[in-house]
Image 1: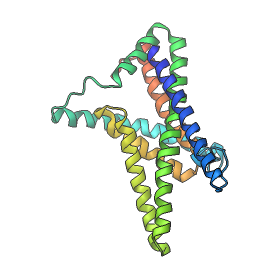
Image 2: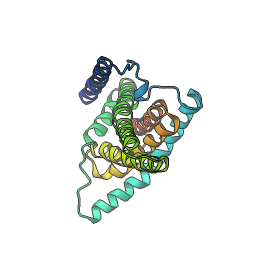
Image 3: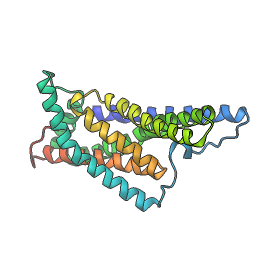
Image 4: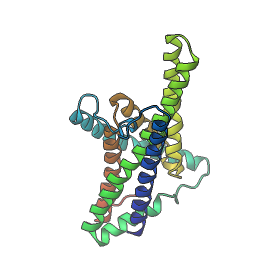
Length: 236
């Protein structure tokens, strides 16, 4: 429970800091005469292309697909790490996972509700705002802006834009995966992050990415809940 509360506090502080920094930047731009609004649409909080039902449905599909892909990918990662002589038994994610599982076995209703809210909803929303809405979006837009000023012809600008898109996806996804501090799940999280970036670009909105991330995390919590309730053992 203490770990989940710490995660909640960290996410709340990160959310506040991100929004405050964004508004501070808007304030500076307005003082310089650029006339920017304080709405969060530049960070991705906008209506998805095709509408909210389509965006949410697509997000659920991506989240389910990512969790299904993660099982064989994690097994492959563990196999490769074992071949390389790297330890895989103790990871940075293990204490949180085992803590949630243990709490669910002791206080099922409270633990399941709290885990779904914090890990399955709040965490994904904040992480998508920071990693896709700010870092990926900012890096991609910066690259396109620089390319638009440096390159003269339209063909070169389009090519540079595609390169910058791929670079932004790879860099921010690798950074996101590395922050989980777990080599055994690095590749699976990297694939998830790439999918979330592509989903953001395709829909023009952060909402489907939040839904996909929340679906991924919620399915993980569901597995832990079933394990904590004794339905089946797990090594997640």
